[in-house]
Image (tube, rainbow, N blue to C red):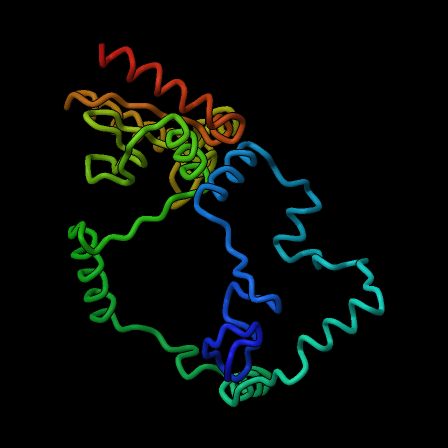
Amino acid sequence: MKCNCGCGANIKSNRQFVSGHNRHGVKTSCSEVTRQKIALRLLGRQHTAETRLKMSGKIPWNKGKTYSVESRQRMSEAHRGIHPTEEALSKSVFARSGVRHYLYGKHHSEEAKHNMSVAAYRRMKDSTKQTYYNTSIERMLQLGLKYLGFDFETHKHLYGLPDIFIEPNVCIFCDGTFWHADPRKYHGDSLMHHKQTARRIWGHDANVTSILKSQGYEVFRFWEEEIKSDALMCANRIYEHTGRISK
């Protein structure tokens, strides 16, 4: 089948358009510059409580929303002729049948658990096999640094694995409120992730900072609330510091 916009591209039988095309034949993606401008305008903005509930799925996004007769007709025409594949139908029938997965209730042997543990340790030791993803606050701070013209690396393989690294020796950590136990929210005996106390997490972070400084690195740590409040201000603090040390 061909894309209905008239571009001539091949599509799957259950689709009408190539991704990014519409009935006018227009590709609907933004340029990289436009996306960065939009992201900078949204820095520090927070969703309302109602919006967060809708995004989590606890409240349907279209609850209370009504469509005109014309809109309903357009939606009906857009979905006309689209049928689920045989694979999708078989999966939905299997899900509704109540049949349990063939691995349900089975457990790994102690030998299998040991082998998986050894394999996981080897992967952790091999940095080439590691994949790290930027968190939302890391992306916000990175946008602020890009806006100020910084070149940086993410998750450089140094002690403590800094979230952002700027040559020659600037290490930046974006500390999440929960994962690093913000002392404005938690007291020392608060039980955090992996059954660690907040005090133990603070000690670990302080040890990472101390070791990096002893190796000649400059270390910056920003709390999640600081970045969400004003990521550009955090980036400016780094800019002012690197400007001083470069003189």
